[in-house]
Image (tube, rainbow, N blue to C red; front, top):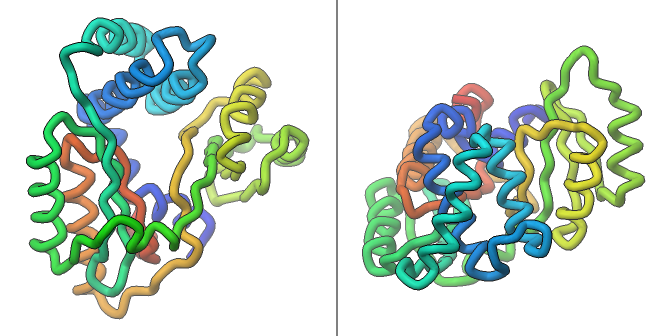
Length: 248
């Protein structure tokens, strides 16, 4: 698996997700609501909110939309009862899948997620059934172009405390410990770097090769269905998907 496909595999279908701006912005709006509920509406004193705002900007969410989401969240705290849930399970081929959820209706979401797994030959597991196969890391992705100074970027990231800097085909992937993510992201942002993506992620410790095309298509369909669900914020898996499928 090439370096380029590694990031694409971890964040399945990012290209399609980026094209569906409205759905992406709605999901980020829910993350903003959760961050505001936990730490207030002032990014200066709410580190989690600053991280979500950075994610929003990396997804090209307009500043006006971000501001409206923060104000709306601050005004709706008493009326919208969102909760965060983690679902874990297996897709065909022994592929581990984790879905991070923000929902206002646990029963509805549980039924829909269970349907996604069952319809595509997967099995919804219990809490902790696959989580141990992933490490939580801060992942910052910066676009690589002919003007990129690889040495300068790597030095800046490592001096800031990054664990690793991976040079991919079209991007730089900076890996951080979860507790260091916000600080390193802010330092790189202040240095003028623009992010393609910046958030904590569940990174698989190992990847699984799929036995045939049929299994691969089932896995992709399951991931697609989960990604398309409005309550699903993030989907992580350990499948080694083909480059052409991972980058759709």
